Length: 130
Image 1 (spheres, helix red, strand yellow):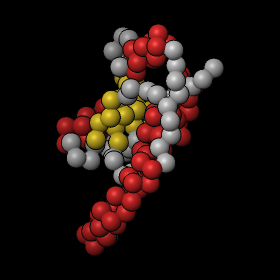
Image 2 (cartoon, rainbow, N blue to C red):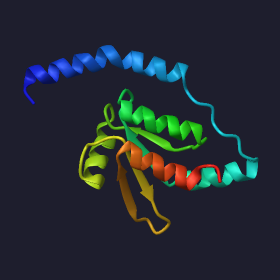
Image 3 (cartoon, rainbow, N blue to C red):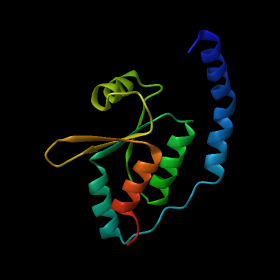
Image 4 (cartoon, one colour):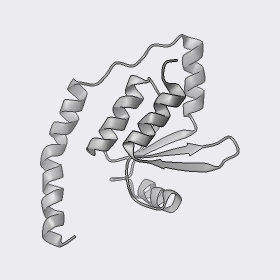
């Protein structure tokens, strides 16, 4: 991508980003309410998850809304402003694409799940209401 196009998209993100965040905040979903013991079990399972994201990425917003709706306590790692998170995303997942859900298994093995629809389907399958 040439310099002019990069500058255009950076400016567009800077202008539209606050509106995306405001719209997301105004329309954010309520989280589901679970019995305390069940929520503690869910929280324990989410400790092995981390979402690499950009704050104003529409696909990341979509995934963060599902996380909120399901009342999940997943670590958010900003891959736009934190160079260490960006480097970890590229080193582990192989590309700087977001959103990306890092799933760490009990044996320490990592799975890097890309694409908001795939992440949301996985979250709904694992943590959605029965």
